[in-house]
Length: 152
Image (tube, rainbow, N blue to C red; front, side):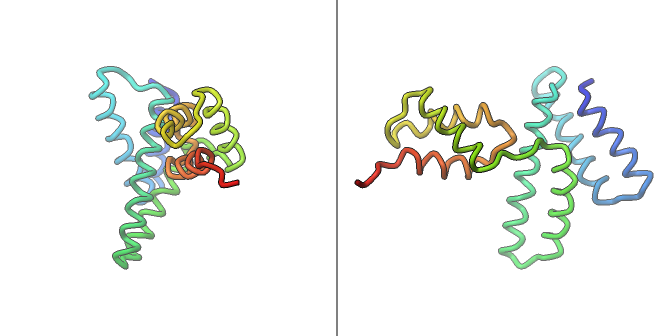
């Protein structure tokens, strides 16, 4: 069993004992999703795959927060933010914009990108190396900016 999954199960047990409803809800849903991903894969998940799944779940929470904000449902925004905070403990530290720009520059050089037509190749290279440490929208913004023709 991967170390991270063991940690999640231990934290779930602790949250149950402390009657932390938010943590229990978030961790149960996450562990259920990990179990489904394990079944879909047909074998145990690695810690890296678990982190990817946690990242996907965190992204879902962020999208829900935006949707609930636009629907003026502050009660649900607070709940989603609390669950996102629980999940964030298990994610690696996000990359800074400077670090992201460096990775994008390296990817552009690696694939020989010279125009916006190379956007997809650069994005896949960056996202494969950054994994759950980078927000796809932020990466896309930086890649577009770097590949845009410079008006001189």
